[in-house]
Image (cartoon, rainbow, N blue to C red; front, side, top):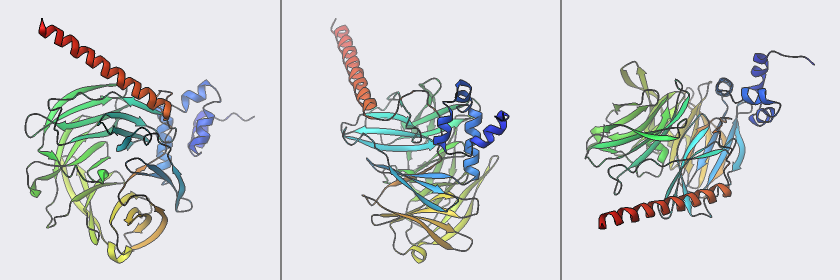
Length: 399
């Protein structure tokens, strides 16, 4: 048997399907450790990116479906429906973004009880997160937002939580660390509100790209006050970028192409895509292209740029009645190539782009009914403890 150097073996392994790689973890203890190491996971992500490999996740209130893009055949197939146990439990799904194959989910019951979860759809491994502290304005808040990112310097996944503060015009901020499994407060940020937070297309107002989370916000109650609020996961600092003013009453939409943040106006007939260029402290907007939606696609309800490929083409998601069309758009020649058509149960939905990953959460817990039964039991225990604490406080006051 030929013994290959480990570096050569790794170069071979990154090219294999992830299911095969996961099986090789069972070879021995050394292989298991090396194939879970950050270096290998980074190499595998780099190879997938270079080969234009990616997946699409279509998520509604209670349903999650995925598609796989095959760069060799230029097709978007391998449809699968995620068996998610929230329907029987009366819970809805909110997706707050993804990072390196991990998704941040929040599940809300009909009683407005929330469960935060990190989930790897490739391995089905998940981790329930502690809820952030309620903050100074625990009730009647106008907005509550999250963002998921990664700090390469300390090799840690982070979650940022934004919520309206009791002080007018301020936003309270907390940051969660996966390593410590805990939340901590950071300095408040001054904004009036997160803009269009009631839109059905939640991904339209939040994007994580380039090591930072972005949200549409405003600093005053006028359209001229629109800005993009940016949180850098490495430094845990905020900054803001004003949007150019357009003579349109239609809302702006955020999207991510490559490693850049982009936005466009939600017009179903014709729209232009703009890219945010960051050069040190300088920021500017550059128009990438204008697309005649009606001319190319006929009548549609909405569209979303999803992924830019190395050949310059862009994957678009088009929503027409109850059909989702995934197409390849060539901005250079203004041509379109159909990839797949999917019949949806609802006319509005969100689409997330992600690359498959073997990133582990080190929990050994996988999404399923047993997990949710345990989660509900934990919630009941937490409520009982809070009730006991309230009783103790009441006894003290009476004395």
